[in-house]
Image (tube, rainbow, N blue to C red; front, side, top):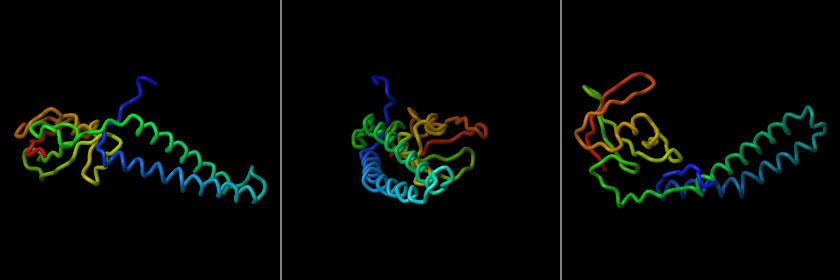
Length: 158
């Protein structure tokens, strides 16, 4: 597994994943096992919707545990204190406006494991972040989105 994907993230993002992993292993896994046990007591498993649902939940939980373990194992922590705030990069918060007359928006560029646009965190793999990485304040950047091309102007980097 020498070429496993690396997951850039902040220390807080890694902690959030570790907390979710702990919850899944210590609480959720036990709840699902108990649901399976109860569903088995209903009898015929071939037509037992409760059993099928519990088994699906178990597969989801085990898959998520595996994913989280991989992400944590391959985490690359971004030291936010050492970031050069003159250039857009992973871990910086970028304020920009759509040219010519868009509203000001601000997003922190994070790794895909931490992305949550509703919370103001976009993935470094997103079209907007990809187009801004390596750029500086004042630059006008073309962004290719699924909806077409747009231009944005970088207002500030924090």
